Amino acid sequence: MEDYLPISFFREFFFCKRIPYFYFRNINNESKALFYKQGVEFQIEKIKNLKKRLIKNLNFPDGKLYYNKNVFSNNYKIYGICDLFIETTDNIYPVEIKILTKRVRKGHIFQVYAYGLCLEEMLNKTFNKGFLLYGKRAKIYYIERNKELDEEFKNIYNKILELICMNYLPSSSATIHQCAQCEFLNLCNDRNI
Image (cartoon, rainbow, N blue to C red):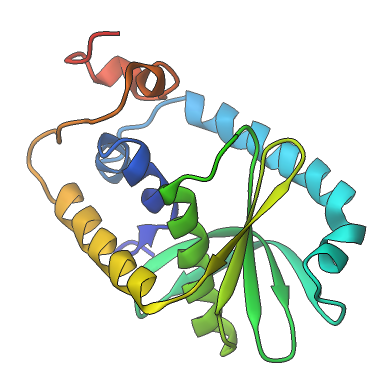
């Protein structure tokens, strides 16, 4: 998947455009492993608690749940690991779980969207809706597929491609609070933190 973009770039693009830039250049930072491990541990626990009521709450009595599935799209040249998805006879519904998120962010929406596009292509089933479970109480946010989001997804995809091809560090619109929690803080010495 060397020429493919990680789906996480969609979330990171909205958090700070420098993050996909650093990742694409293989500028590693040790703290990523810790954040990733914490996220996976939380998701496993959350899924155990939600498993029985998730299909009921989302109203998919005939749906099957799949966890941490590797997904990719040859059409969009993207790949990632989908936290969870529900498969019915004709449809797929990607579900993304966010630990500490108190509100839905645009990057999260496009992350779910990208998983849906991958699953649609891989399983040859329809993707019309996805879900974001966020916060400690797993509030449900519904994401409906539409033409506007399809167009915006393509525009963001192209902006990410442009960004990672830059020969210079992109500017950042991240806030001080965002920078303070970033794993690449030590690489952005132009920021006043």
